[in-house]
Length: 312
Image 1 (cartoon, rainbow, N blue to C red):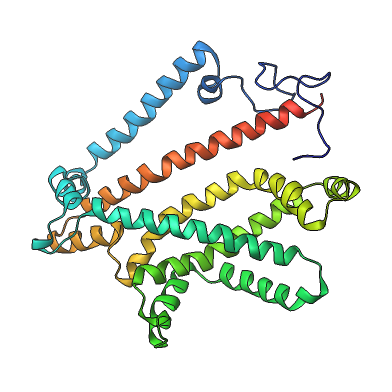
Image 2 (image 1 turned 90 degrees about the horizontal axis):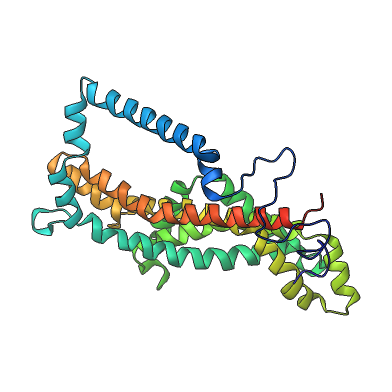
């Protein structure tokens, strides 16, 4: 709900959305997905294809001609070991990497929801100017400084080993996965709250002034005017953070939780082969690459929207 700003699409001085107009001077933009990816035109496609074949062929040749290529291939890319680690065999003492990845997915989903809520609360507290909230603002600032400064792996150790040692009712009797998700939420909320704050600060003061001129209370102005625009600006960086979050769920395995990376580690220790780690890496790529491409798509759509509303 923008109350002021760019002229409407299709008005004089601004091209309509989706039009094939020329990019502004000095822009790296290209018209069309293929042109942006390959450099533009049929000759660009031919050159890009040829250079890709050369680069990939060179990398494959370096690997195949290396003195230890056969040993590396057996250690990391053995089809037999990759399949065995994927399906698992508890009777022989190792778990399925393919089944364990579901725990990573569940931890990611739960952590993402909690991070979005907690980080927004922290950002709103830090943005507030009410005198009564001054002590809470100090605590929120200290929280962000603490968890942005301490490495995530240390936070996981502190929560996963420290909380059970307190012997508190209920709190100290949770699973290692719960402690791991708690550590992820505490750490990532500090980073994401700063992303929220950047989005809130990116909303022009004219929008706030316009909301006040319409007589909207501060809470409604925040809900219907400021937050929608702020969230639209921060979706791409938020998704980038969540790509990292998906990968960092593997760190919960240091507490003994059998997630994909831990299952791969157990397999490699049982059979002295590292192909299980390759399987885990492939599974994480399957999860993160679609999210990365979706992030790129949102960034490109936002770029087009801004260019469509810009005056020449």
